[in-house]
Length: 368
View 1 (tube, one colour):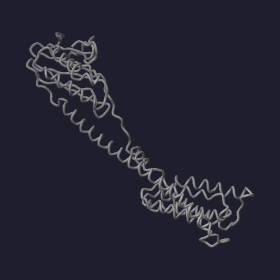
View 2 (tube, helix red, strand yellow):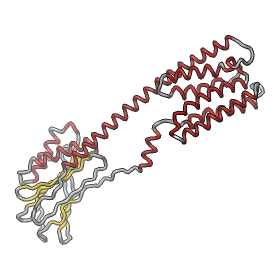
View 3 (tube, helix red, strand yellow):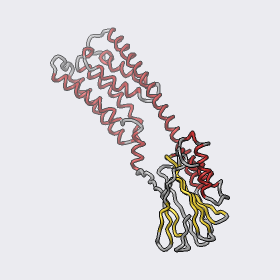
View 4 (cartoon, helix red, strand yellow):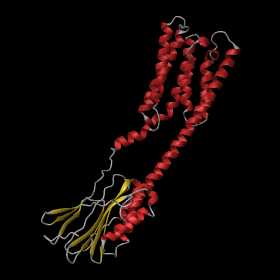
């Protein structure tokens, strides 16, 4: 028992154990983060093609065994790739032109076909570059992109025949067909994996959205459990605030009128989040169940019994400070289960630390 004998008024009753700070993310950062989840930009997708195509041209010019067999075709292929790359940059900068992004890999197919013509036609070693626009198309959601990839590969590999250049060979036509078919199968696999990934991401976002909504509702409920009005007790003013580090936390405070004056509680449940918030609400309700018992120890004992019996599976503990202010003689009766961070501050500035040597409720060995 602590009696404020030197001053009839209690200026302050307690200090919170800690105050959490909510994380703040600038709106611009949030926008850039959400935009980053949509995938690589067209310019970034085009970069590998640009690098490998340039390497192919340099290799053809530097290695005699490869050589350049049709300079005009090679020059046109470079021009087409340049147009495609420029379009990729424009589409990246102008989001309203995003629908034209598919033109870029289509131009890449044509550029690779002309590159093959310029470096030996069917003997060219650069035909494998068609894999890059194939992947580009196959990553798009629609199954039609697999067909587009097939046509693109067939046109790219069969361009010499389509332009009727060189000796006509029916086997080249069939080789282009089966090569395009193989690339189409690969595109189908990539398209399916991409589709499943998108579905998984969408489901994950839906779950996250539902979880955030539940957390918001839980936060509203937890704030609603906190006292909002002061208790009309002559000579006293009561105020409190709780700032959890997350939407829901395990810290709580409570006050309410009792027959002898005023009862108030401070609690801190181990952990953070919804689990700690549920346990905190339970502890608050158990403490309130002892409202008509003048001895504050009874509230602590009931809470300890709840933690060691009904809530033992939760493997949690909480520090609890419960006090009664008797209006008739300005006396504070209190019980402290491991909180130890309360203080009695009188109107004249003197203060007294209300220390505790008892264990928190729920800790094995704590007195029930």
